Image 1 (cartoon, protein in one colour):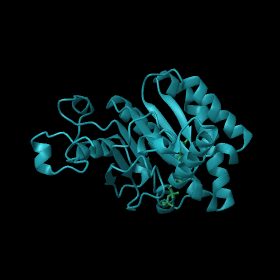
Image 2 (spheres, helix red, strand yellow):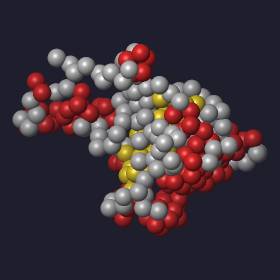
Image 3 (cartoon, helix red, strand yellow):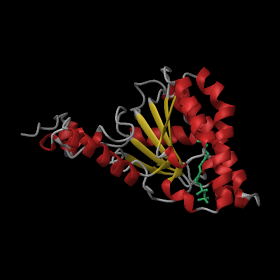
Length: 258
Ligand code: FPP
């Protein structure tokens, strides 16, 4: 068993600055209990609430979750509508608690397809938590990694056309400033629950060097202990960023590019 207070001790664990989660398995969780899929999504909100608490206690700087992908519009109309209602009602229900916990909320993705009611809930939640200094909690909604990269490209092109960026100056660093979450550290740990081993178009650029962690646990059953196990697994990984294991052990820093 992993103890949260021990886990919070920096000497015991190398903590990821940024954790991203694909919360998969709500539908199967409900099906196993002969319940409608909506019940699985509702239970999924409860699981998310616990993971936010655990991430805050474990001193994680940023948590980003995939709540609705660009492709999730392909689900039955009824399920999409239930999910949209759940987003509004959950935000209204949990916002006071999140504010109290010092969480800073941000939504990424194309919100233009959402109802006015949902858009105003998202805007209000961002406005009311903007100055908070606790966990940076990002929710991806109508988000796709390819959408993010395409959107960034269009924004960058506008700046090239206006002359504020020169084409010759474009490099990975400049490009990445146009992506969602550009001001946050790259994703260190990518977690997917529900037994599937896929990235599913989540944070493609931001996860380029993430450690991947797959859990068979269905999202509504994924609790603080499971999250801490993922953190512990992360702390045992050797992150080489292109270097050799020997270089790492000798603590040789990467050479500067000419
Ligand atoms: C994937 O499981 C889950 C989703 C598409 C929705 C996730 C949403 C929540 C947990 C609610 C979050 C709420 C807020 C306010 C952010 P699935 O339905 O694909 O499960 P399955 O693979 O078992 O069918």
